[in-house]
Image 1: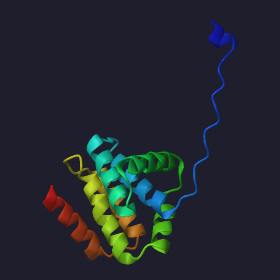
Image 2: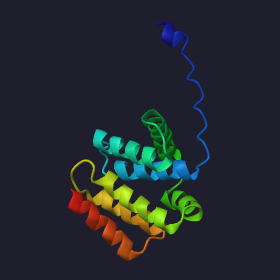
Image 3: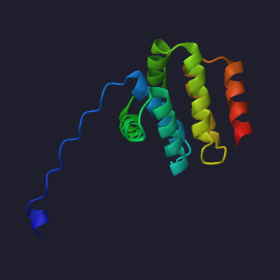
Length: 145
């Protein structure tokens, strides 16, 4: 009864941070994992491992970064904007490694999904990866499956 008379005011949501290369990478990894509408623990764990390894973070720091990336991915610009941040800031070899990492996230749940593959192709193209490198990343990831 009191709740109807005196509804609690929800606090204003925290503003999202401006995308940095770290956040853009994390958000793209999350976007790949969400593409099949099924965000599994195996994908979350793989994202955390990639973020920890890439940015030399402790596990808790990587998990916090991923949580920020999840919020950013939900409310942020499209894939081309994230990809352009990475394309401008990261050398080609590192972007190629990012393509490999994204495939490991997409397949972390143990199966292939058409929506994840479509999302991956769009991201890899936006990152400026060559067709040969995209095919090699896919083939390597599928062999590991």
